[in-house]
Image 1 (cartoon, rainbow, N blue to C red):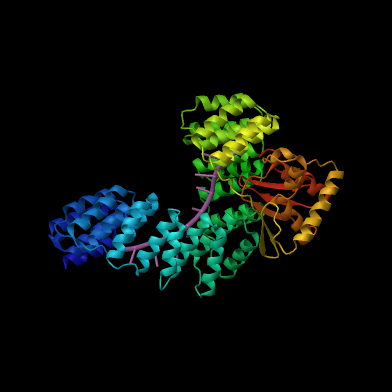
Image 2 (cartoon, rainbow, N blue to C red):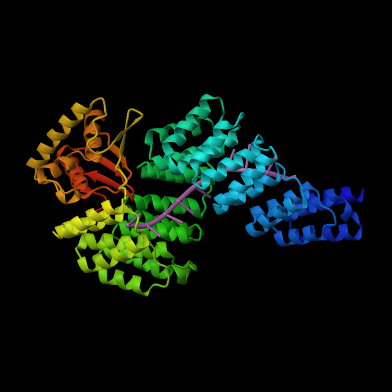
Length: 573
DNA sequence: TTAGGGTTAG
């Protein structure tokens, strides 16, 4: 009877202090030996995030059953004590307690959160040893762990051999693909629907995220419709994911509509919307939103400042950016980290204030990474500072010798300066070190289908028409003053061949296809996996003027809106 | 007592 009333009391506890009172009574009335009561106490401590109380209680318990171990391991797993989580799991094995379908997901989740693939594999062996692979909870967590550790093939193998899959398992697999192969993520979502599963809100957030990663506007519209038709409420997580989706699909206006429709917003929603304006070069809108956020009594975090500084630098709002950078620690107690410094280097770089950028790097106390040097190198390329470029490049190649993109960037700088012997040296270096350049791809959506182009691609059924259109457009552009910029071709070939290669860049092929298949008046939307090359950028600007078409390009870094001969990036990217 | 969801620098 005493035990029952203790448990009843626990359910009324609103604060950890109340749990401690019940705990004291349990000790007085000697109900501590009742495992049900002790386990409940442990569970409630964990629920109230009082991990130290839980840990003490766990140590004092004279008896433990599988529930005791699971609740404790679950507590360590959720509340960040990964070392304790692993240690307690090892204790389980040492004591000969059989790990069950409650304990294992907690430990696997810790491996996932820490991206601890090796430990994850060891736990997988334990799962097999105890024949628990058929359990939905265990298997779904293993799939999730492999996917988050970026071992997507292992995740998929496990997923494929599962005899019966539930909604959570599908969602985990779809979410796993979102980061490394968003296209497959959407294919899997369609398959899940075909198999009769009805997605819930978490599944929808996952697929929204995949649309954002892919930049697939037609799918984004479909998902939006589905969400509205099925009455999903726009909570803070779904709303934020949709803001991000529309922004990354190239439609910042739709992102803002979602933002305005949301009844509740937190710092993540505001930051996502500020970042959205940043990608699209809308610095003033980002600044206005930041002030609105402050007026709504939401405090900015480090990500808000990254998004804000990014928006300032990409819109050329140098002084605003510097003001925010200088005030973030003083006024908002947000300490600048490497990402903020990189934005400021970019900010100075765009303004041609290379000495200040270099000085900032010299005096900063934060550990420098490759993206910081890359920002400086990019600025040197635009402003033609060879001396500083070599310094930045050396630091960059020291940190990241295996990234061919760095060699390409540097040889572009040498090419621009006419130092052809250096360009040749770098070309040889790429070959000798057997560095593989990431192949460039461009995607375009036409009539709800996604088409993919590579350089010189002739695989499209309308290939002849695409090439004819491209050549006719190039002739028109040449009459308007377009001169192909062959410095962007790294291969050591004759000028005419260089021209030929430039003319068939994947982006130009996709634009030509857009011109013949997308009605006049509608924008041509394309996505690239790499940064847009300088010549394709000039080409796109001229097409927007000569052909009177609006072109929206999402590259690896940002969006470019081409209209009437100009680009929203202001020719700096 | 168990599994799945949102923002960030080149």
